Amino acid sequence: MAMDPVVYVVDDDQAMVESLSWVIESVGLRAKTYTRANDFLAEYDAMQPGCMLLDVRMPGMSGPELQARLNVLGATLPIIFISGHGDVPLAVRVMKAGAVDFLTKPFNDQVLLESINKALRLDKLNREKQKENAQAEAKFALLSPREVQVLQGIVAGKQNKVISAELNISLKTVEAHRASVMKKMGVKSVPELVKLVLTNGVQETAAQES
Image (tube, rainbow, N blue to C red):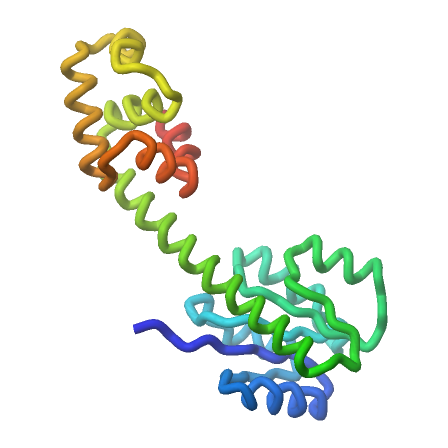
C-alpha cells in the first residue's frame, strides 16, 4: 500500500513553522516539522514520499548544507527553499544543486501550494522511475554473460549475422540467445527492448559486465 506524502518543514522560526503547517494541512496534506536540520536527518526515511520546505539560514546546519548532505546520501526528496533574503547567487547555487524552487518571504499561500504540488508530482515521478529501474535491473540480472553480449549487439542495432561473426557463434545460437533475452527482459519487440535498456540505465550495467 502506497504511503501518503509528507511535506517536511525545516525552519528555526517556530512561528513560520506553525504558519506553513497550517497552510499545508488546510488542503489535506500532512506536514511534519523540524526547527533543526540535524533533527530532520536523524529521522529521515528515504522510503517516505514527500517534499521539503527548507529555510536557508538556520543555526547549526544551514539549509544549503542540509541539501548537500542529502545529495551525498543519494536522496531524491524535492526541496523548496524559503528565505527572508533575495540572495540571487545563493538561489542559483541551490537550484543548480537540485532545488525545485526558491521562495522569498513573504510569499502568497497559493504560490506556496503550487510549488508544493509541483514538488510532490516530481517526487512521484522520481519514485516511479526508480521502481522501473529496479525492475529492469532485476530482469537484466537473469541474463547469462553470452546473453548480455547478444543484448549489447541488439541495442547497437547490429544484425544477427554480425553478432554471430563478432562473437564467433552460429546464427542459430544468436537467434536462441536473442529469444531468451526478449523473454527474460519481458518484451515482445526490439524497439521495446531497446527503450527498456536505454531508459533504465541497463546499458551502463551491460557495458560494465562486458
